[in-house]
Length: 166
Image 1 (cartoon, rainbow, N blue to C red):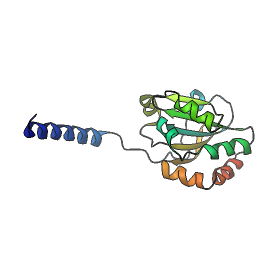
Image 2 (cartoon, rainbow, N blue to C red):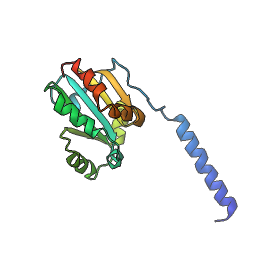
Image 3 (cartoon, one colour):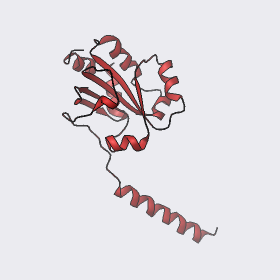
Image 4 (cartoon, helix red, strand yellow):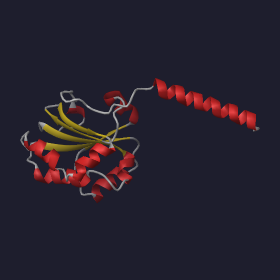
């Protein structure tokens, strides 16, 4: 392939990518308090307060996950709170191994990327969403928000959960 053909091909690819990105949905940076998330298809624990940890499979390869904080929430909160994982993407057993290693015993709902987008749009992952009776009470969206929440050792989330009977 000569330089001119290569340049034309790369320009075509760049224009295609630019057009596809500019017409796509804007990433959602926040789930609003008061939004309804029907959890019946995700969490069947029947508990009024749920902490959803939504994450892509690749998050399990990171050294920084909220697993320790979620374990603390499970051990510190009453039986009226459930922690549920929603993993997005193709999983080849990585997530199960990660949960075993982290000693995190949570129900896990697996969603393909397309299915996740259907329900949650372009919500940025990872995300932790606290719901009470399917209504969003608080949310932490993206690596930075979850990192600051985890840095507080979960005390902020534990306090909020105690307000809802946890």
